[in-house]
Amino acid sequence: MQGVFITGTDTAVGKTRIGVLLAKALYKKNIRVIPRKPVESGCKTMSGALLPADALALKQAAHYEGELREVCPYRFAQPVSPVRAAHLSNSQLTTEQLVKACQHRDDEGFTLVEGAGGLYSPLTEDGLNADLAMALKLPVLLVAEDKLGVLNQVLLNIEALDMCGLDLVGIVLNNLDNNRDRHMDNAADLRARLDCAVFKQNYCGNISDELVNAVIAKPARPVAKLVVS
Image (cartoon, rainbow, N blue to C red; front, top):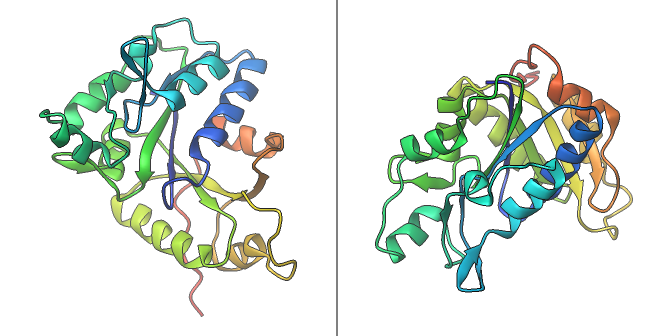
């Protein structure tokens, strides 16, 4: 399976926004994008059915002709972790179910999978987001909010990715707040400590060609190693 698994250092760091920008950019390059957000919680009820807003945004950005239920078959109303939301709905999720939801028969397609929450957030009864990425054997794009404290979050995630044996495409520092301290430069600080690609992204801005090319490059970049003095 050719593609990428988008995860974050936390929830609400802009994973879907990055996924949407990436899907649009790949579509412009005539690459067929197969979006997958296999489970989504916090869905609103529209016309008597749960509408997964993130999955819908990915589907529209990718110009995906398949059904929305293919993109996101598991939907829950409660705005909590998917595994908790499933419990509240008297159902259970397994990693195998989500793996099957992400699989397809199109060898020419680029599979763009977005997780839920952070890398180690519980996703199913028997797994985390990291377990789904490992089962799919997809390289990871790590999204983080560009804020004070993100250095610790990213470095911990890099260590976790290394322990899981997951390949890393790069790190996206998403600027959600233009009122950041002007003295802060998280990208420079991370580049000084990591041997991997670090991309700066304005939430409302366009995605860079460098980031798009890194995502579709073969082979994926190996997991970065911490620089130890």
